View 1 (cartoon, one colour):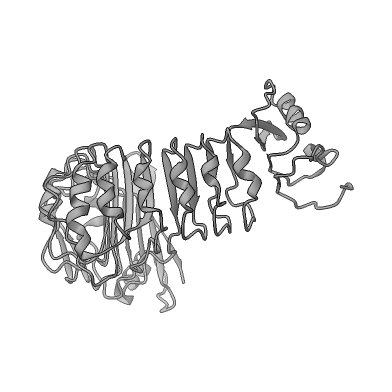
View 2 (tube, one colour):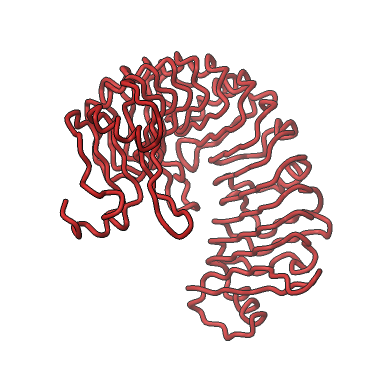
Length: 428
């Protein structure tokens, strides 16, 4: 590569080129914007060179390497790392080479935000693989050979919907072989589609610490609850019904897993499940499209460790009344409903730092005294709410109101000891 060619190049990957021996002369210095170089299944000669740069003894088992540029004292240098893991995160690749399955010592493979649509048919040859991460890819189904990865501990694949107020926030999930449950080392399984006899088979996966499952039908919930009840190490759970009108009925679960810290429920709820009173370890709760009609806050206000509460189209009423509790809550987000007002008694949520209300076109009133009665509050964000409340914020900021204003962010800034002012930022 001649000097001056590709001056804006930031990433360079060479994959499955077993005869590849030489990077461009001066690549460390002559490509001013180059930030990352990744090699996989290249020649031993170039791997030896990178090992020397990284001050690592070369071994024939080394299959992948990555060099990342970092800044040190206003200058830039490359730091090399030699891997039995490899990340292609954000790499502009459409497919994985078949030779990938020959990297027998590979333990970690990250395909996040690539355009890969499928995994190699013989993925099962990667017998030492422990983590397969494929977030926000186009992979819809895993090949049958995935069940041969007996050392696999983390299987994460999903594609989030950017619009958080839509029901299908988790997409459709990925389809996995029903005998995926034979992977006895698996600890993280996310995000999978409920189909076939998968839910019944989940009862074997007592070792799971994290599970997210979507497209759950009403007839599946009893078996799902039985399976979850056996997962004593579960710390994170996500369940989404097959459509926005399908009831999400998890009353068959007698008691929540004792270590559960994160809970995401997407689907229509008739009422809050009775086992919510056993969520003693819960720190994060998201109710998505629950559309509860009755006041549900008394069922969650006493959760002793709850720090983040997100309610997306979770309530059909016009007023939410936080009358007591929520003593450790630091973040409250509400979106996608017909809410008009938030009422909050003094002393509730003393640790609240962030408050967000979005896509609530009728919302007009924040809690009385929110500027002073919530001592830890640092940020208030409103988006796509009523013109009335936007007019109030414009008046507080001493600026004229315009109907095009859709978003306001209020940040608390300390000006002196124990004194502060609110700074407002508006956008369309």
